Length: 166
Image 1 (cartoon, one colour):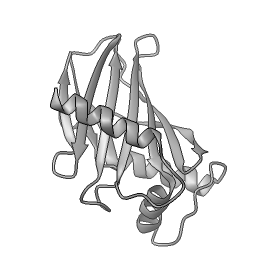
Image 2 (cartoon, rainbow, N blue to C red; image 1 turned 90 degrees about the vertical axis):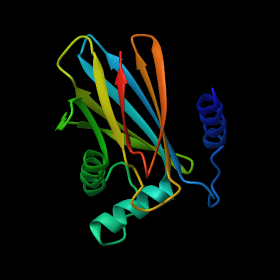
Image 3 (cartoon, rainbow, N blue to C red; image 1 turned 180 degrees about the vertical axis):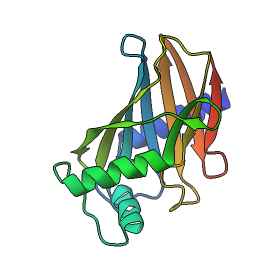
Image 4 (cartoon, rainbow, N blue to C red; image 1 turned 60 degrees about the horizontal axis):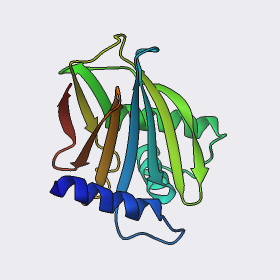
């Protein structure tokens, strides 16, 4: 119950992102399982300045976000693949298909799809280490809609991954 209250409070804070610098480091991920396409559809909401910082550190040169830039698309796809993983079998990451991104005020939405090649899941390992290499206080909230049931988790630097059983 405490975790759900904490997640609701954080979601409220994140929904009121402002253009000024922020004192907390968080992301929200919404995942929907699509049994028809046998895939996970993923949308991640992050602060633009944190994203630019992470991509700049990774690229070893200044990166400014632009949804139309092929270089930024390539960097985003690589960053997501290295920090966000899904596994049906522990130790065997599923491949991501980067869809794109879009900017909204001072946040960026990043979209990708993960084919699971099965119409139902027994278990799923999720690892979200987005920005944990930059911020010790990074909180990554993950919400997964699996066949109408919502599963939520809070992942941090010390605990980047969890297993869900369905």
